[in-house]
Amino acid sequence: MPQRRFAPECETCGTRLKSIFKYLSTEDLQRLSRLRGCRFYRKGETIFFEGDYPLGIFCMHKGKAKIYKLGNNGKEQIVRLVGDGDFFGFRSLISGSHYKASAEALEDSAVCFIPKEDFFSVLQRNMEFSLQLMKILCEELETAERYMLDLAQKSVRERLATVLLLLKQKYGTNSDKQTLNINLTREDLANIVGTATETVIRLLSEFKEQNIIALEGKKIKLLDVNELIRIGNVYK
Image (cartoon, rainbow, N blue to C red; front, side, top):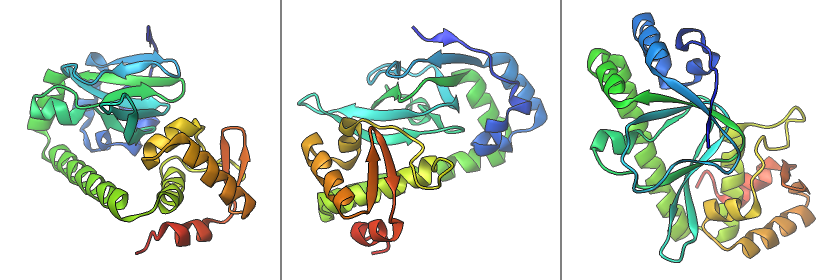
């Protein structure tokens, strides 16, 4: 079971500056601090399930999570990755529908929760906050459309190169400026790319042999970013 966890007040939270909540007034932040809760999820724990009815929104204080759907064959398809400052579970809340996907912690994570009524109250009072939320919804739609286009037009090799670059953009790298700051299982990586785990393992080995990447367990080091850009046709 997730554990209750202390998080700093919203108005002094450094993670807030990475999120949409930086547009809130001090008054709204103080109100959210009183009403929000924060829980600790162990790696692999589910934050919410597909089909559940949303009671509020989640904000990642510290950690990483995946948003995924299950296909008819039981295979996962990861549709979004979550990092520090990201909020999630809001589309179903706004549309008044059940969750269309599940959320699971990719590492030990502290996640804040804001009740539905308080979130909508802030939306009604703060126009800038509402506009930024609309912008995020539009960006997510654009990302989903681009992902569908990539699945239809790009080879698996191209998609893997693109995903490695996206992971670098999303989570950054360690102090060596090359090792991705996220440890994904090969299965999770395959579920993002949209292919079989065996195919991802084979392609990673090919990239390694070509000195494009280096592998140390689950860690992936990007040795030649320009070659990944070329393979992924990122600027096409």
